[in-house]
Image 1 (tube, each protein chain N blue to C red):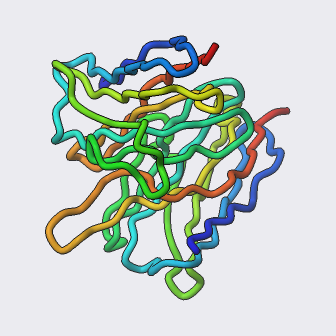
Image 2 (cartoon, chains in turn red, green):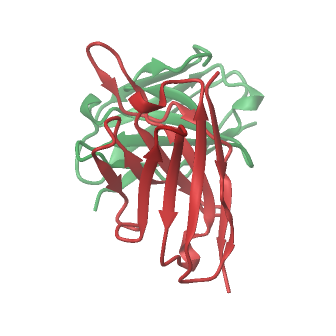
Length: 124
Length: 110
């Protein structure tokens, strides 16, 4: 059974930093692209960042580029999101999601498994 | 800037059929954008419904179907049930590795 368990959320002041973790199990983590998606209170879902299957490519939404860094530790089957220079508008539930899968002939770009989310509150 | 558009709200009667759409401000949505659809109820994580335009995710009832209608991606619910009352989000995948969510459609079943 695929499981994604986020942790690391909490209250932080504007300008501060926080690192989120997502512990993965039930699938081959090293062969999977992974993403972070967030949802501000009462708002819609917003893609934040993706790390490719190879780990060699990372992608970011313009709203977090230069402030957030996605990474992974294959030895721990864990995905991270390092968030620096946090702003009030970064307040949201942050979800970890697996980035689809590849068959022998095609790669499917979507979010197929989701964690339950961790709340980040940026406030003074 | 890429904007993915969805109807803000829709309503359907129990047993009825509804089609939600997913458009692009800069042109037409095609299968190359790998449209996917997600259902979310308040306080819960999203649930994956459809990917690659029309492939149902594991365990999703066949009353949910995906397609391209005209220049938009579409999610059709046939025989709507009370527990389909949820928010629905589409996502388009850009070749650059970026994914863009639509603003979501709040579907009311009544």
